[in-house]
Image 1: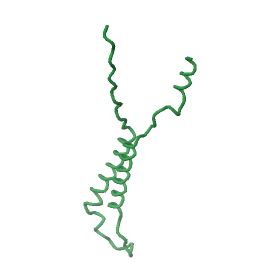
Image 2: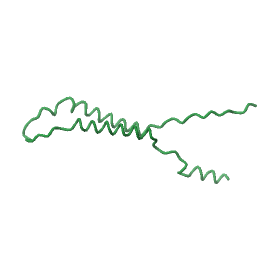
Image 3: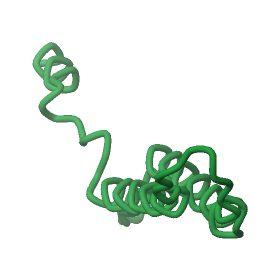
Length: 96
């Protein structure tokens, strides 16, 4: 009987999934932050490459976009490392 319980413990079908719904929601939020940062970083279309456009030095492209992209990557790390705590089971021990 000990062999059967050992086989049941080693069965990958009985293990909890690596990522849960919370992890996927946090991952989606991180991807969304990163994509918003990319769109903020996107430059304007200049028809003449010899024309200087001072719009590339605005605050949105230099400050806001890299911060959003960094927050998106940090959120992805948190989503991967996040592990919800297991619910504590109350065990009532018989009184002697």
